[in-house]
Image 1 (cartoon, rainbow, N blue to C red):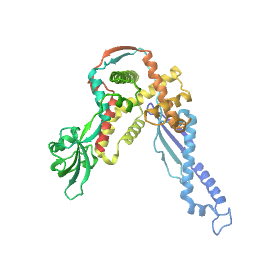
Image 2 (image 1 turned 180 degrees about the vertical axis):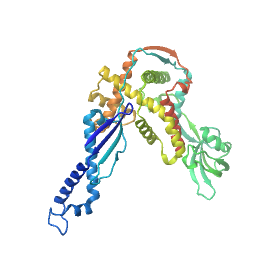
Image 3 (image 1 turned 120 degrees about the vertical axis):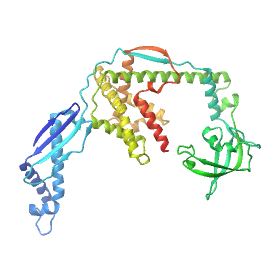
Image 4 (image 1 turned 90 degrees about the vertical axis):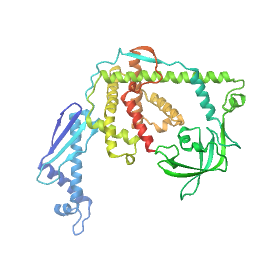
Length: 444
């Protein structure tokens, strides 16, 4: 067997292997001999069936077995010549010839490996940390939101008013009525059901509407025509008072006051904004590492990551092929940036000898589970050392440590933050993720 490795461009390896006609014949004879021992062929004594009979009955299986052995041998030899090939980023479907006695057998494998990474700069960046004050109007809005989420619906013996909740029997022509609760404080509902205002329980209202595909109530999505609504009950949303009864209900200690509650809400918003500022700093680090350390990302590996990204977020049956191709093209640059960061961060970790112990990976796993609302004690079951999930999380923790290192070796300047942050300040990864999320919402 002759194996040749070609490197047409950075990150790409083409393995070419050729087996001589004599090697093909010997391997066929070897597999035939194995079949002869294992099979009991009628008309022949055990182990005495001629090669021609065995090939006539089992030739396809034998040729496939020869092909698989030759392919594996070619891969093993290629890895000996280039050890990094066993952790290739992407391996295309091998191109193989046919197994025929008297003819050579060829193998061609296209693989993409991590290109050589030259880190030009990862220290001394100038970063800007946005400082966002907590406005009292934000505290007011947050408290109103908390009260709304703890509100109750109370029936009212009066006509419907704006912001009421109306229980109706909703029907379309030829269909049985269905019960429905209409929240008129939701603008998406109010624009279609505003005619309910001023009506009372027992009244019947007819509306003509065309509901959008993204309407909140799935039962109405995409429907159009005339609809009948019989009002069953008029209800008002009643928010709780900021008093001892409410504080006890939400688990606050005795003596807790409205001022304590306001201060707690303010502190929560402050911490949230602080995390957002830190996230913005980390985003800048990623952006600068990618810009200062360009990498030629192997094309087929890039597209495999793009397709994986889409598959995890979009149902292909609910998007046109043309739109899917456009989405793939849009995502290429953002995913390429993501991969570039991964390659560069991994190289920096190697330079700085950043390592993460198994126990630290498990600590991170517990944090992931808590953020998802799961029991952190499940970490040991779901993330076992040596598994792909465990090693993927290890790489993520290492890359986070790299960002920490870069931040620690950069200058950070506090700047006022424009609360209406321009989308252009987002990384292309973030912007494209938002577009994909919008598409996914349209499918629901």
